[in-house]
Image 1 (cartoon, one colour):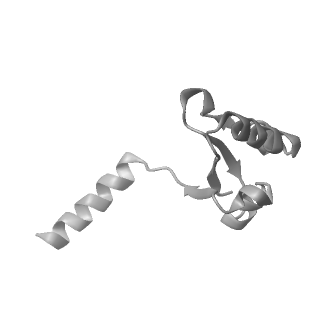
Image 2 (cartoon, one colour):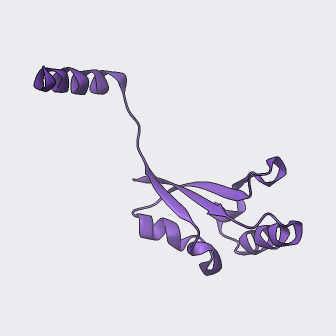
Length: 95
């Protein structure tokens, strides 16, 4: 199943930050209630890793008020042998 990173930024004002956290936690969604937060380090965003079928489904996890600022990134893994083969094939094309 595809994996996505959801990044939900919010305002840095103390009250607005607290409200954003409250709204997200109140959703009751497993994904949102287990989000990681950067607020205490001055990065006012929440991050979630989710396994869902599409970017649209990942965005749907986020409360509507935050969707406009949310970034959803499809994730993948690279394996060294695959990258080495790719580079080898493409080095021949360039040479």
